[in-house]
Every structure is written in C-alpha cells, then in structure tokens.
Amino acid sequence: MTSIDVQELTKDYGTTRAVDSLTFSVRPGRVTGFLGPNGAGKSTTMRLVLGLDRPTGGTATIGGQSYAALDEPLRRVGALLDAQAAHGSRTARDHLLALAVSNGMGASRVEKVLEDAGLGEVGGTRIKTFSLGMRQRLGIAAALLGDPAVVMLDEPSNGLDPEGIIWIRELMKRLAREGRTVLVSSHLMNETSSFADHLVVLGRGRLLADMSMQEFLDSRSRPRARVRSTDPARLRGALVRKGFEPVQGDDGRWSIDGAKAGEVGAIAAAEGISVLELIDEQTTLEQAYLDLTADSTEFASAATSSTKRQEA
Image (cartoon, rainbow, N blue to C red; front, side, top):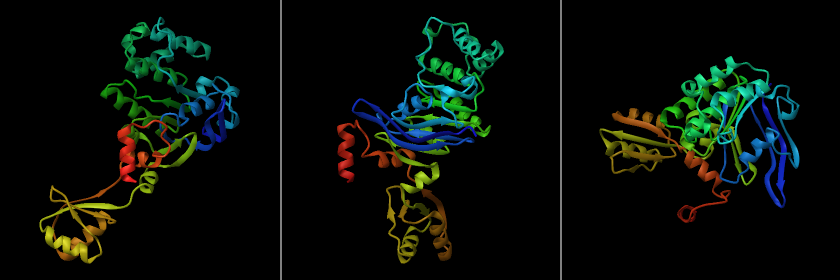
C-alpha cells in the first residue's frame, strides 16, 4: 500500500498548537482534497509527512514508513510545497537535472517531465524570468520527476492560467486513475469540487471531516428540488396536498424544500401535469465548507462575520 497514514499527529510551536491529535489516511486511486482556513494546519501537516518538521507527538507515514526511511524518496513521493523554492539563476532543465542525478535518474526523464508540464521550449531559460504560473508548472514537473506512487501538492493551481488549471485538474485525475495516492491542498473550492473524490478538512489543527465529496455535501445540506411547469397553480396545489410548501421565484420556478426531484416528478405525473424543468438543488462545496468551518476561521472580514451573525 502507498497510503499516507497520520496517527495522533501533534505539532507545537512554543505555546501554539498547530496540529492537534490528527488521525486520517489518504488512500490510493483517488484525489483527496485537503481543506481548511488559513492557520488550520494543512501546510504543517504536509511538512510533517515529508519529514521537514519533527512532530511533537504521533506519527506520519507513507506506505508504513517515515519519509526519512524511504530509499530513493523522489521515486516514492513527489511533492510541491513552494513553487518559489527553485534557485532563480538555474535553468529549468538544470534544476530538474540536479534533482534527477541525486536520485539516480537520467536526463531523459527530465526532458519527459518538462514536455509533460508544457515547459519543453523553455527548459534552457533561467527560472528567475519565469512567471508564477511557469514556476508552478516547474514545481509540478519536479514532483513527477521520479514517477512516484504518492503525490502531494500544495495549492497547485496558484498562478496558472485557465489552460493550466484544466491541465493540472486532468493530471490529478489521471494520476488517481493510475492508482496513485494524490493529496491536494487548495483554497479554491470550485476547483476542488472539480477534481476531488474525497475530502479531509481541518480547523484550528483538528480534523473536522474525513469523507467522500458526496457524503460531505449531503451531510451539510437537505433535499431541495426546483421545478417549472406549464400549469404552476395545479402543481403547487398538488405539492401542498402532499405536505410540501413550494416557493415561487421571480423566474417562475418553484423551489420545494425537503423534496427530491424524483418525488416532485412522481407527484406531477400522477396529476397529469407537464413539467418543463426539474432538478435537484445541492449545496455547493463552498457553501458546505464555509458552514463547517465557520467557527474555525482564525481570520475573517467584518462583512463575513456580520453575515455569520445574521445567519445565526
């Protein structure tokens, strides 16, 4: 198994507890989104997994071993934590060659990942001339250099243009389909919802959720259907008789809390009412995430705090 396993992981910086008794696993064959507000402990956890920090307590292992105990670690784990870390005076090719040689890999693999990352034509260019998006691509190329079974990416879409965002999205899905373990930290909820199969959510260093994307959305919302009909008055009456309280919007569509589209469709069919549109409305990942982490956000704007008080 190439899973990432975190058990009772704790990290203190002086009197500040950045990670608090975390336990979760990241399994192969799926993309796991790693979410949480600023200061939640995501980056610290990733550093602990990679052996860049020493835990105060607990363990973080990859395939049952600590990162420090891995032979040829670049072939086992690929990681992007900071796209700005590459030396600006080196060319992209030389940066990757240095990593390759230190891990027993040849130049052919360097050329392969440069091409895969869309940097084939600028391999001889100094990194200090790269845009943020190009540095991000280079960091991802470095993470993939050893063709690893485990890939950990911190904010991989940062600085990428629309084409680059589509590229990284499809890359992560492909890596998961190939049976690799993929952990991706991101603040972009819409992006995360487009690629993640599973979610691990932190708040103030503690685990708030560890479940599939669909389970997470279902856990933070209740059923609601939206319908548009050729005979809205009759449809409303039929729904009211079944105990629902439909609310009509400005666009003429009815929203029915507590009902699924299938139920509404069956009621309309039984009454012989034609339906022009019928869908299930679901809470977005952003809405569900904000609802879950409302009490775990260390920094919030006045407008956000006001909204939370009004909703409460």
